Structure formats: structure tokens, C-alpha cells
Image (tube, one colour):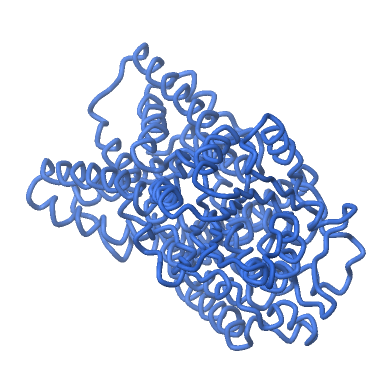
Length: 616
């Protein structure tokens, strides 16, 4: 323990509290940088240990991975056991199957790959994936599979070559991460090749022990690092292109704090306070516990606000972390129960009795009565089929050229064109039938999370801007009789929307903007399948967006532009219609319409915007 530094435990405390604050939707919009700080700390501590042992000739793969197992597995297995138990109660059969798969991936330290591959647009929302946070553990452990091998091979050549190779790998990683942000942002976020530079920064930092800072310089470096760290904490948000080059900022800040801490700065003494050190020691089990606690709390109490759930979630997370650290991790890691057989047995039980049994029983579907299972199965409806997925409704990695134009674009006049994101695509099934009955053909050009707004840039959708530019060019060339725009409208782009409407109004006979449909706090089928519906489903507050939209249309737009607010149609007198008379859900998640819901709403929309042609 001669290399132990209390201030690093204090920095761990800062990191885990930042992440928890971010996940609780508190005033820490950049709190996710806590994970990046963790990576730097991990690289510094483990890299130093590995390189010291390699240098002295005492490195052993067996000893190294035994230490990693004793450090990682006890709290991880405890977390997987209790989350599995709670998931078996709260999750629907389909979601339970997904959870079981994620649990197996997590135990194999491949959660980052699993969640990347599962990151389809209509997959479960991130806020409903109890083990999503374990992606970072996957990145870390995958790195430590290859790093010791690289260290042993290159150290035989020379220490200089090892440092050069690590620096080259780090530079290549950050460059690749930045490149992927513009084409595959999900890959840049989840996968090791776009994240390993953060661990490498820590490793390279561990080799600066010969560069001793003077006390005055150390103070300046420490507080500069702290200032930079807090700047990223409050100036970054979920719209910041990340990781990429911007991830270097919190990593550099963490490196500055760690490096200067050798000199015993005032910041290092502050981080070494007992409460910070204790939270730092709890940081790993606390990180493991906090996210599933938040996810399960929202599922168990869907009618409660995030603010109401905040204190109980934090308290429960701390309690689980304390139990895990004192009763499980410490006895196994430092006590007499250090046999590797215990881990193998526990993992085997988890695989056999947990995920495999869930997969074999279709997510323990016997927990639900048949009528509830039918509701959860959407009465056999296939939402993606009605969206015309990957043909007329594009995935994030698809561009304009991927539209199946022979299917998406009608050549029969008069033509109506549906343009927007998934909240446009979910109208197609219903509008197509009603618009054809009114004597028009309906074309569809829609793309996931890509609102129909010229000049609007979506970080996660690199092709969105080009798609919109080319759709407008098509509108100007084809001059459709009607253009229908629909989207998950937000409050921060009314000016750009207004400019878009003015431009396309010159080429279209009528421009129709469909307002927002309701967004609920939980998937509608889950609510409808619940036996006890005494507590109404909670709806997200969209009043600010509705107000902004109304203000924009009141300011004057061309006369052929119409706005059709949908909240009153969807929720007459404030009561939202969730299902038809046969109990078939009108929504398949928190806000997207099923085919039946689309038809129900279209029958109300079309008469407001289209006069039926004679003879139709």
C-alpha cells in the first residue's frame, strides 16, 4: 500500500457523484465526464502496477487477472443477482429477455459491444436498461486483456518503444473517435477503439514520476485541472459531440489533478478528507448500484416525478454500495474467502438459474395473464412494418440515397408528401388510407431523430442535414399538392422551422404542420397490461413547446401553411385515449403510434386539412 494516495480516492468520489448527478437529471449537464475521469484513474493505477512489475521481471498473468477478478467480480455478481431479482418482478417478458442477454454480456465484460449492437432506434430507451452503465466496465476490462501483452512484448525491445507505442495508440484512438462522431457516434461512444486513449493517458501519466513539480507549480496545475474539470461538468451536455477531441478536456483535467497531487497540494488535501476518501472507496459498488436503482424506481413509481425519486434513489444506492463493499467485496478481496472457485460457482449459478432460465421461458411470461400478454404483444401489430423501416424511414447510418424511392415516392398526382422523423413515420399507416380516400397519393420520406428543418444539425444523425436539403430540393422540383411535416417538436428550433416553412410554401400547394402527440412517462402497453390502473399514466409536460409553436404560427406565415395541434385530438378534455375498444394499444412505446392508433388519429386529422375530391 506504499503507493496508496487518498486524494485519488477523493477524485473517484467526485467522479461517481458527477455521474449520479447526471443520471438524476440534476444541474450537472456534463456529469457523464465522471466516467472519463474513472478511465484516467484506472489507467494511472493499473498501468503503473503492470509496468512496475514488467520492469522488475515479476509480472504474472495469473496473478494480474486474479487481482482483477477479486476487484471486479464480487460487487459485479452481487449487482447482477439483485438486479435480476428486481427485473423479474418489474420487467415485461420482452424486456426481461433483453435484460437476461445484457446480464450475460456484462458477466463476459462485453456489455459495451452488446449495447452498441442493440442500439436500434426502437429498442428499449436507455432510461429503461438497468445494466446500460456496465458498458464502461466492458471497455476497461477489454483494454486490460491486451495491455499487459503489449507491455511485455515492447518492454523487451526498450522502454522508449513502449512509451512511443502507447502514445501512438492513444493518438490513433482519439483521432478515430473524432472521425466516428461524424459517421457512427454510437460506436465512438461504446467501443474500446474510440475510448482506450483515456486509459492510455493515465498509463503515460504514471510514467512521469521522474518529473517532480515544485509546490508553486503543482498548485497552479492542480487548480487549473479543477477549473477545467468543473467547466466540462457544467458546460458540456447531452448535445456535446463526445467523446472525440472534447473528451481530452476532462481527461487532461484529471491527469493534472493526479500529477500535481504528488506534491501535496491544497486540492489533494481537500480530496483526502475522510468523507471523500470513504465515498471513493465505495465508488465502484456505488457506480454499479446507482443506475439500476434509478431505472427500477422509475418503473415501480411511474406516476412520481424525478425530483420525488431523487432522495430515495440516492439512499438506496448508498445502502447497496455499503453492503456490497463491507460484506462482499472486502471479505473476498482482502479476507480469507479468496478462492477463485467461489467466483466460478457464483457465475455458473447466475448463468444457469438467471439469464438462461429467463431466455428459456420467454422472460418468465407466465407472470402475466393471456390478455395482458396480448396487449404487450400489441395484438399482433408490427410497428416497424407500418413505418416501412430502412426503406422510407431511415436508420441513423443511412443517407438520402438509401430511400427506396420506387416504394416511398408516389408518381400519381395529386401527391401529398409526409416528411419528418419517427413522429412523422408513425402517421403514415393511418394517413395513407385516409388521404387516398380523399383522392391523393401519399409519399413518405422520413428518418429517425431527424426533424424536417433546414440547417438543423443533429449530433447523433450525421446524415440528417443532407437528407433534409435533398428533400427540399425534391419538393421544389416536384411541387407536391400537399407537404405534411411532423416531428418530435422541441422548443429550441422554432426560427429554423419558420424559415423552412416559408421556403417550401413557395413550391407546395398546402403545407401542413402536425403538432406533437403526447409523450408518456412509461410505455403505454406496460400501463395497459397492469392489473391496477388506479394511478393514471403520467404524461410529459410539453406545454412550453406547444406555446412556442402557437406563437410562431401567430406571427404570420404564408397563407398556405396550416398548423394542426394534435394534443386536443389525442387527449380530449385532458384525458388521453390509449387504446381501442378491443384493448389494442394506440401507442407501442412512450409516444409512437401503432397502426391502429395511427388510423384512429388520421381519421380526425385529414378532414381538418384536406377536402375530399369529388367522386372519391
